[in-house]
Image (cartoon, rainbow, N blue to C red):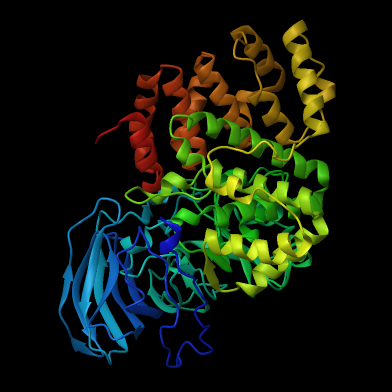
Length: 617
């Protein structure tokens, strides 16, 4: 997208009362959006009243989405829809004409609704279909307790349009109320004010008074319980998991306090986490007030809870200040990784933070290598027109974005950097921004103000990582590398020297095996440390990757890899192992496993792996 077309985006006013919203006018000019059919400069939604019934027998959500709208003199309003059955649309209570345009494989269909210049509300009656990508319906056997079914949604990046007809652009923020009817033995929770106990009739009412983009509207339904950690933090999980989850995430309130000390007040009142069944495709999803999390982070020793710090950090970077389009995704994730690592440093020390940062740098180097034939994809600011926004959701946005901010911090000093970021979040709260606006704000409020020169445009608009990138070092990892080298040279290892290693040190140890490591050496390490039977999912993933790449076979390891891929749906873990099968020229083995595992995966995961393996149903 050319800079000349990018217009300033100002904040949508926060509704002081969702029930009686004030009259509003469109005063902002919205960025050209390659991933939405909406034309918000003509007519825009501002508030949603959602009334739906969730049927676990038919796997259908049905109901009505009613919107308050602001009209700039238009005679139509355009929403996004994909694989939805739209039966009726009303404008100010009267039936009106609507059309669904041609289907686009990525974007779905434009839902064009005829309105008058005076129209203030539209109501869309609809139901989901079997092709709805945001929803995953799980039977009882796919849950932890194996007694009740489960449903969850995943809206990022552009999947909310597959379960709600909506203007599905991150720059369009709305408030919402919802009434959700579910079976009486289940509980519903959303990215909103939530219940702590089940209702007798299975009807739940929700309210989100802060304006959020469509991708953050989320719903989960299951036989779940709640356990409070503090007055504003707590966890949801199935009964068999609730105590483990509570223990694992017991530092949540400490994390919120550490985050507030860095960059200002937490503006969402409540910070809860729900641990979903294993098919959830991400480590976590930062839905406001209720983070969705994978059970793969429940390690028993709080060693993988940097994920919670990451999702908490999104309460500022991403949720409070949102990327205007998915081309600006690095503004969400690069800032969040930087903030996450600062939280981890505040709570657990600089060495732990540096280990996390160095693992991220290694992930970035691997990503850069994989994208060497498409260098434009290694820029922070992307051009994803005509492509899925998922194509930009990789280590470039996360780890290169972090590295940019860490390098900037080393240039200007941490005190100035923190003051700048705190002001950035406050100035842009509950609004969206794009890369160009950020650069302007950076120049005005940090660089020019302090007479500092920095190669900002090279970092953001040129491929790869500039030469002035911060050097990340870890004394702990240096020690790990020495022990690994001694083992390679002498075939001996002193297991007492590893007794106090963190999972991050173990991951670094395994990931750095030489390419010519012998199968006998892997067998020796497995016999000594029992990697194949590890209960830490992160260690398991990197060990299984090395096993596949280096031909470390055997009934035990092969069956464990198959079991892992059939029970874990986290896209990062799954794609890492299937990439290994492909790289090792063992794709037939990978496909055999994938055919049995695929029904357990969310569409976010299957879309990626289908393309990776060339799999067609």
